[in-house]
Image 1 (cartoon, helix red, strand yellow):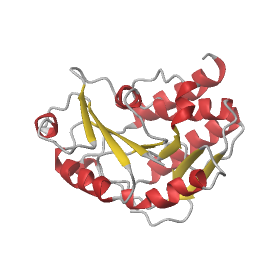
Image 2: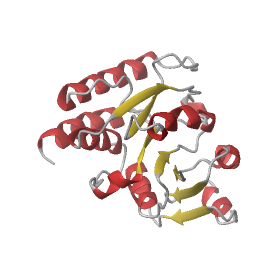
Image 3: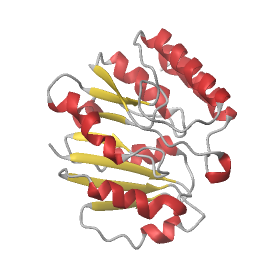
Length: 226
């Protein structure tokens, strides 16, 4: 099967070359679709120099958010399995094998990579952990599934699901939205443990408490009003 790896990018100049190198090194038939969301730190200029034949780079003229960038990438996929990959090195492409295994052997339609089920992870912010667990709990209550990490970047799924799902969120509401829609389609969802090398704010972490409040709104929105 061919992998379509969608990488949203916003101001990730410090890690951009390394993440592209790591993704290129995974031993699968693949296409890489990078979407620059109007970066201002030099990422845009660096991406204009990318010339790998299996890599497509798309550009937003204005910053629209992760959900919009991922949606733009989805419009270009041609592979059988889609992997969403952040560009900040918090998530390791070395985990692809375990992420795609339940799909390859026919057990799953969707696989989430969980940061909370046993993989090595950097110890960071207690209140981020609490907020993540609360949002995951609320999402589970409203979708009737039992994920341990709804907000994970690693969401891997059969590309055929895009025929049934339309993504509307522009920013981090993408995470609860696509989760609710996978549940509504009664997809076979698996979780696997992944490694996680989280960043602090000095190292470039972007998500804040405002994004947590927005996620709370979107969890309710996509359960009752979509």
